Length: 288
Image (cartoon, rainbow, N blue to C red; front, side):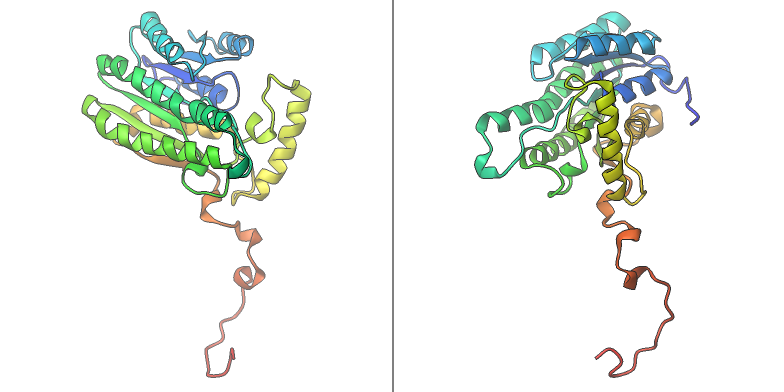
């Protein structure tokens, strides 16, 4: 893969949930393209090690995205350190509460929406004045194919991701006045701890690798392109939205799902559809 190491030169970025998965891949990609990156997460040791490994001025700061003060402090750190803010990837998330609606607890519901939706509100709110002072910027929110269609994720997750899409569209209209673009990324099945059913803080690297291999097996079977998505697939799309190459793009949902939302893979369709058969001209009684 060829990466333009100067496309984001001079830009400053914040990535939430940056210690693993999509966030880690995005932080690496933005830095590789020349940006200065502030990684934020609640996994302090992992996040700090990753920032050191990335180099290029990358730094880490503890940030619990459900705490508005933490989000505001991250924005202030980026501005104090590098003098501006150009890119925010509101990415932090988790699977949240699942199960039938009648057994879903109020606490589980509230916690899921806090992490997946309210955090995006906080990130957008506090990025706005800093980006306005910088002359504009790009906010990229991690939504999901679950934010576009029901039946893929749990109730709470689906509602939260629909909310992320709605917030993206609404704020894009307001912030366009300041040359701030707001877009959502909608991943399909991606090989991360979420699809493995565990976070990296819960299990060791060997068990995570084993779980991810299993996830890649069922994930590839579910998608038209016959492979599960990787965090780097999403990071590449985020980098494009962060760059001036997408300067005429705002208020959109960029679906990066290997064809999942299009329907069943061709190889999964009935043979009556996929087999190459000669056409028989219709005559009365032929199919009766």
